[in-house]
Image (cartoon, rainbow, N blue to C red; front, side):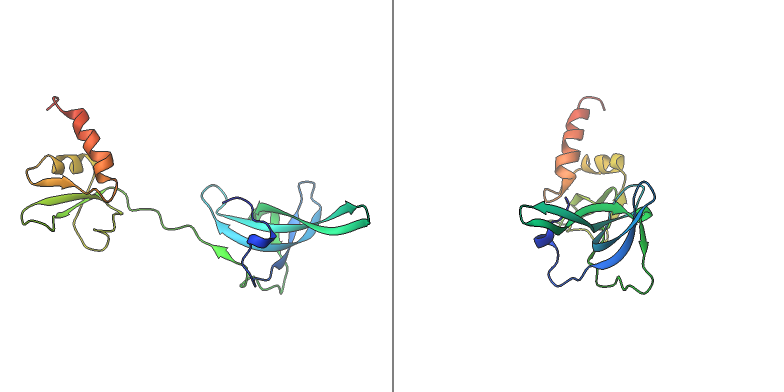
Length: 165
């Protein structure tokens, strides 16, 4: 997600004031518009509005420059409520690995799924490593699910191994 402009922010969400520390150590009061959880060394980034001035033919006009910053650059202002600031959390990471379960269409057959496949999440099945998933697919009556990454990832891997067993 890129930086958000004024009309793309959540309607009705009032920004909260915070203090931004600039690289030279100077501080300025800014408006916090959004916070977002992200991967990387700094878990959160914040969209703030920094006060600025724009020169117009009619004179100078107040403006706001929006920029993403880390929590290391911000200091909360005592007594300012941040609960109304829109907060976007990262979705949980997908489950690693593969799962083998019974095929719904025929007794005694199995289907190998990506662990995050909607057809196995919360329904049990045996968790497998990639090598175990490939072994399971080589058994009679086994197939790879075509609704998740299992067929796309595992079938080509099996084909690469043909003739080496």
